[in-house]
Length: 212
Length: 306
Image (tube, rainbow over all chains, first blue to last red; front, side, top):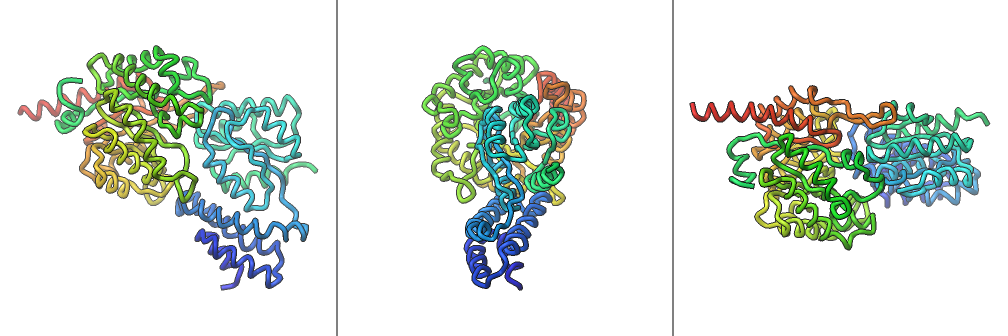
């Protein structure tokens, strides 16, 4: 098995130590850093995302895979910067005001970072204005909002309204158990994702669709 | 509640009716997003009592306490963990007033809301202690059952069940999890199948097992069937009124009491012991469940006499 394929397999298997040692080996062998990231780490995580979607994998395995991937990325980071491998874009993300759940959001962050996005985590119970301010300060292209509760998902509309009122250029994406595409349309969000790997696809779409 | 205990009633093959959603009705009364619903047991006991009374009058014979997030770990997210005893005791007191000696009181205990090690940060001992603390207050205040609900991690459900056995000895324990439908059957997000859930809960001494939340009533009939095929324990089903959408800026659950009716009948006919509601259900849904339970129970009594 070639090294990159082996790396993907160990991401899928959630074996952090194996991932670390394979990334080190790849760096020692002077393999291009972008290939290690894309064809090793991200390729593995993409499969994890697909398998979670169809529930061939469940949350525990996905979290182990995500942790293995994060470890691999940490190791790669200095090399990525040195080699000017561009980040795909910048996303600010948080669980909306009143909602203290962050398992789903954490998963989205892992997947986004894994896919090569820069992610600013605003945490949970985030005030509507804070999403807007953070997007401005960070010059983020996308604002991501999460909610687990039917009672807090309505806060998403406040964030969308604020963004429109204050002419924020960042695109808005929503997700979480009670949220639906219909709801996203109704409140005027730019996108909806029903799971973490779809969130990555949608955010990729939002950023590439943006006029530069 | 007299006569007989909740488990006696189930042993007599009676369908028991539980109550419906609490949270959405509390919001209608003024619960602020992000505030602790359990704090209302002290600040607005009248709200809780009114809702529980409506459910009893609709025909619920099991009333659930407003203590879903009343464990120290959950309350800590609101910096209210020091008030665990007060909130839980008050909730039982309110439920007892609403029950008016004609309903059982089931103490609602929801998940700790965080992942346990190795996936998250929480130690299982810490979670066990948290449940023990809450459940001992509930038991001391006098409840007819502990209802461990909305669990998605079988490991945490078993920890809560063990805590109930320890902190509330002799009190019947009902345990319900939330499932996702997959091409290979029903699983929790943590990957627990109905078969493994039933086996582990039974092994650890649960009295009643089943599912709440996460699905509408049609899916729940299939979940109940799956439980029936792997366990002889009494089953409890508390269904959402479907999955919510927003209509005209307001949260809307699509499944009406009329929609519930044939599926509730199916649940009762397949021998589900306790039927109630979860998110989006109202006293109108509970009235339908009451009517069907009465029909089925009358039929069974008649056959027993024949």
